Image (cartoon, rainbow, N blue to C red; front, side):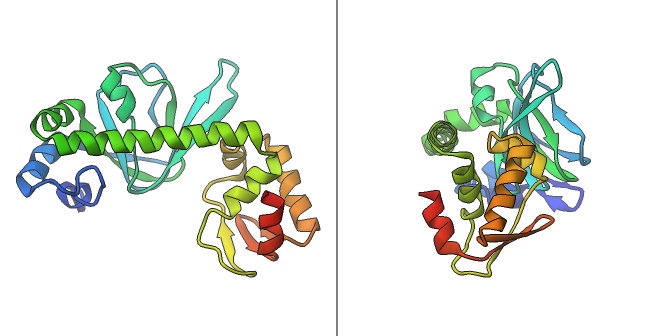
Length: 226
């Protein structure tokens, strides 16, 4: 099945969940997969919408967030290329509990739960891989709760800056999303996030230029992180 400029099977075969499926099995999944082009700022689904499958990102970024009746937002997760979202609620047959919005022009694939359930019945290995993926998501959420509860705001920001492939002074980090979205993801107000970046800059640990952050003293940053 080819949609737009991509062959769905080729992309699905690169996902950990599907990378051991035979070509015919991938064909079956692809037949139950639809392509969604979502413009930056467009909503993929709202909290309360029915969940009838799960999404995976081909390119772009999607944020998952809680939105209060007053309009304030808490970003739960930022989903990038090759990653999926919505599996847990698909199994629970519950409506979405978050709102998903594109942070950039994005291409998503939506796999229906019917196709997933059929594959689960056919192949126990597929079930184990699905469970492993859900377990990784749960572990990540628990780690987030631990960080929010036990780490300071400064430690959370440093943890984010150091999570990439950094080895030495002079290495650079590009903030993957706007500072407002990233602050919410780290459970900080935008003002607190900006103040932390300013303080780290004032101490000669980083240099900030828009979304580009240069690491000036990686060893001291690691000490600050604790």
